[in-house]
Length: 577
Image (cartoon, rainbow, N blue to C red):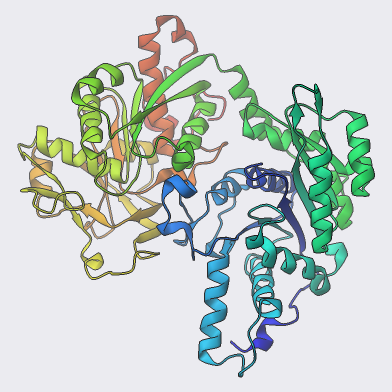
């Protein structure tokens, strides 16, 4: 594409842009802040698009270690993206796309490819204007391709980082293209509490604002993270140094539930300030009734349901962020509190699996790659099957369930996936045929939403109550069709497949209280007000087990059982149904 295509603006004048930056330290929660702002604007009746600008040189996080980056969130259209996009979707209930996550690697890769084609007509390619123009182009694409009223752009990293400078320069230039009144800068900072002094300190925030100004960006609002609410005196002090009205200093106090944050921001007047800035009518109050209900359910829950999450990345909980959030969503619906027992599959022995996992109300094995910790997962699946503990397997968790069943029920001693053992006598899980010639690792798996045919008269059919569903995938290996009949003859029910019946999507054990596993990732589509069906019914089954384990909690447990009416959304004991 010629350079001229990256210069100027195609701005229609209808869209507004909110830029969220962070200062002082990383991990302040810019993603949650951007998501909460999105929730408030959606509650005001606006259409919102969110975009994450990541400063790392990787093209996307798909090849990055979970220990470095946390989970990889997969969008409906098959992009491997930053975990913050999961927050965006959960808070706004709007699907992100591959255009919703832009990395420095992706930007430079695009510019370099155009330079190699000669699109710049022999000109010198520079950070300004070529890189910054490409960044601005990607922001404008979100507005143009999704027909939204407001685009919220989160800039990864911290102000002052060398990696973030091109992105900050791009958003500094942005008002030239779209008009200053159509842009709003929100800066997230830290106001730490110094215990020996017994007070909150504003100096880090002052320095952070000064650094942002040095770059050329004057914030329109500050969200100040702190352990407790900011006093009027501190707000006034920060406002003075930031050259802002006092009402634009927002107290982002710590809360015990991230889903409370939109309500905290609303109480602080964040949505009103944003709409006032853009000249949008604020007379209609936001509809936050559903959001208030889920926070009420979380606050008033008295029963605890213990879920053993057996995985290989449990040292970093963010590696399974969408999974744990989906469990919480199901807990909101069933009025119970989810307690996650993080079980390291790498060190889990058969003896420990029996003793530790027998105390769980449910066992969940999530996705993952590589052979480390696989035998511990197989032991967990065995315990679940033998002791009739509710089981949910996701992606790798389904493959583990198949391998365990093959070994211990179907008589296939040594059954395994060829990902972990190329010499296994029973390769019940094998590489997808179309993956055998793939060399590059990034973005080459089966990714994104695909149709799944749900077979009649199965547990899965009762859960979904639809003949065809669409779920997101991220994997290379599938159940081996050459051994599929033997597994079925031994009692494993294949309850979901691709429409052509070629690929196994869901397996289950019908005589078990709940034993269901999916090749797809249901956690990516779960919402606080609308839990993913597999998680909803898994937690229901675990809740019933918890009630039996703790008789005094029976009164608070949902006793509606597992039936099609509830799965389809008919009234039950849950206030969210």
